[in-house]
Amino acid sequence: MSRQQLIPECLENILINLSETKDLYSCLMVNRFWCAVVVPYLWRYPFKTAGTSKERCNKVTRTYLSCVSEDSRKKLIDAGINLSEYPRRPLFDYVSYLQGLIIDQSTFDVIPLIFRLKKNNISSHEIHQRIQVMSAHEEWILQSQKHLVEQELAKVLLRGCTRLHSLEIYQCEFLSNLIPKILSFSQYNSSSSSTASLLFKNPSSPTNPSPQKLFHALREFSCGSLNDNKPTYDFLMMMSSHCKFINTIKVHDINSMRLGKALASVVSAQDCLTCLDLNYSNSYDFSTYEHIFQSLFDDQYNQIQLPSHLQNLFPLSPNSSIKKKFSSTSPSLSRLKLSKTNLHNIKKHILDHMIKKCDKLQSLELDHCTSINSLTPLQHSLTNLNNLKVTCYDQDLDFITEFFQASNINLRNIYLSWKTNSPPFNPISLYTLPTISSYNLEESFKRIQLLTNYCTQVRNLYLEVVTPQELLLIFRFLIHVQKLSVTFNEQTNWDEMMDELGENIPKELQWIGIRNRKELPFSVKGLQIFLERVKETNGDLELYFQSAQQTYLDETKKYEFKIINYAGDFNW
Image (cartoon, rainbow, N blue to C red; front, side, top):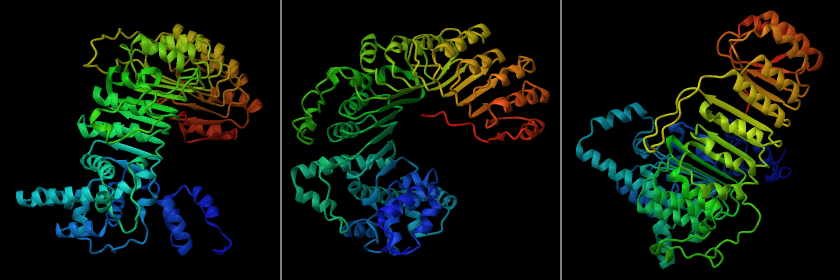
């Protein structure tokens, strides 16, 4: 098809359906028209495309460095940074296409970049060797060059911050250079637009962003392990005044109360927040995240209050300085996730606010949290919940039992995983966790009974160990289940029940995953009986075996059932 026949919008629809990055690179070579359409698409989320490969991230960084201004280029050359291979004007203004930015030690490790500007084909091993034998003077020069490169990269990326849809920041040296640059840029723009123009002039982008437009288009924000210092705090407070339409906020490993309050202001400023994800890599007390929670459910946090030294720097619009009008309707939050958090010390007034404001919550995820029984009063307000994902320790399974009894007939997706070992020691909390009880078959059966009685509309179900009697209850009463992932209890004789299980299998069940890692607790003959029965009512069933002898697989194929090699998607 010729260029005249194919408009850019059609080509973009084609590109959306190309899942492989290599296919996009191939499209660059078709002709100039295709190249002009593909490049902006390819450079929207360059660091996600690069993935975890440091080499590919390094190439992305090198490309952005080629977009520096003429003055910056001269500075870098004078400092011994070789830019001779780069044209003075890149063919494309790559940073103007940027919509997703990830800042961490992997994406902006500029030391390899400096070495590769001097020698293109140098390996990471050679770089490490050269650093090891450097003199003190050579090391000082390298650190000076590193600081300068980070400064100039920060200036380039600043122009892309007006179109960002997604921002992920984790503590690293480059972030320490970028944050002051953003703050100083806003300050210079507020005091003198001409000064700012000189600082950030770029021939490929004559129009510089205003402070009000920084992060204005942001929809997803993630941060983790940030330094508790004044620039970081000021940056988060700046975001609270500039960003109003973030849909998803993810917070990882923030242990500072001061940063917790700053993030509470960011959360409070959002008009369209739908997902909040609070995550620790180790088990910590809930108190750090308390301010963030209060900002969601407590009226007093719904007014952004900048510190006095920031009020002139980031003036608020007339509407944003007024407390949000809290109507009787609930906030827009539809997904809440807590990871590795000790909920024992959650305060009653926060729970009371959550009970009032969480009636629109659709997804609740509690990942390796302790003392989740503290959230029991919240259960009755979650009448619109569709997705429940809980990975807990078995002393908290009472929460699940009471949850089902609280009647969540709307639940469509249930992921329930529990561990019988003790949770990690929590050095912050003085709370002593109760002794873990041993696996109790009677309690387990009661839990499945409640599940099948109250959650009759479930579509996707992930459970830990089940007995034949429990699986039979699931088959008989959860008639709409489409995906089921379980581990068969290995201490039970399954052969006696295989006929009845096959006879009662739900007609809507699309696939069943058997996650046993050791030998399957039923014989080949038992599997044969099961498959014969299933063939009569559900011949399209797909099966997944995490571990199975070839004889089991061969028997399954005889009945023309499809064996799949994936465990299914239970993430929402």
